[in-house]
Amino acid sequence: MSPILIIFYVLAAITLATAFLTIYSKNPIHSAIYLVLCFFSIAGHYLLFNAQFLAIVHVIVYSGAIMILFLFTIMLMNLNKEDEVHKPRITRLGAITTFILLSTALVLIFMYSKPFVGDYPTTGEDFQSIKKLGTVLLDDKEGFMVPFEFASILLLVAMIGAVLLSKKEKPTK
Amino acid sequence: MENILNQIGIENYIFLSVLLFCIGVFGVLYRRNAIIVFMSIEIMLNAVNLLFVAFSTYWQDAKGEVFVFFSMAVAAAEVAVGLAILVAVFRNIGSVDISNLKNLKG
Figure (cartoon, rainbow over the protein chains, first blue to last red):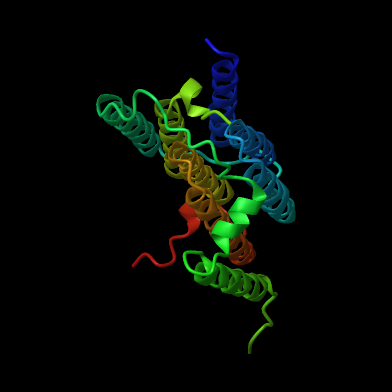
């Protein structure tokens, strides 16, 4: 068993355990903390793939921006307590059954399709440095210029929408 | 640089992503707190991103990783708008319990 495989198993165990604890823990603040740990372990997976830029961006965007947004919302609503009522038992049972059936079915499908056993091609050339990623993203002919611009429009619209939605409404009479 | 998948294998990453996605689905179905439901959606998005990067390494092609950027942009926009909606709901109803959102029921 190579050390890389051991690192992978440890990271995968952390990822799955923290993802499960995110859903299981009653206090939303604890859920948010576990989710941060989950995101960090996923960034570890990206580092394992040698995708450094993606790992950094992942940490900045998810652990930095999105989780701060979650934490601020939780604090704003003062949800820092464990008073959540459970769903009815039949719904919870249905959720657990769905989880078990879905995961078993998907894992078995991919197990029996025998995805890609054997050697993996190595081209030897660099394909995931920042330089190469920028070239692929903003190339003249085959690049992703138009989706890039649309992403900026999407973020602008989301920003305006968030401000409008969370603005205090004036009492209308 | 040697292909890392020679030592781990793409199937391990497929199984990890599938399990992570199923945990996200489970969270959406199981919890009543709308914020936790949002967190579960984030977990599902991350499972898909992880699989994108794994297959990008499998094909030794950067396009998969570029797609992850767009996926992250969409996730950020979704969380911003979703949490704003949650704040508005909390202001009107006084809780974020999704079982209380029954006003549209006839």
